[in-house]
Image (cartoon, rainbow, N blue to C red):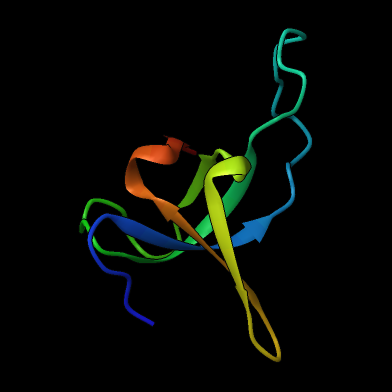
Length: 77
């Protein structure tokens, strides 16, 4: 798969222990591993925080992929 425009394709990961989120955050952002990036800024295998409400999902037989716009990625871990 190759994303177009400013999309990034991620595989979803679980939040690791040891990452502390402030009490003011009702829901922690999601963590994903970069599969492909149309912008060229991120590298395959990098972990990122992203806003899960601004995503689209695609499921094949083995995996679930998340499509998110580059500007909706919150941070590189």
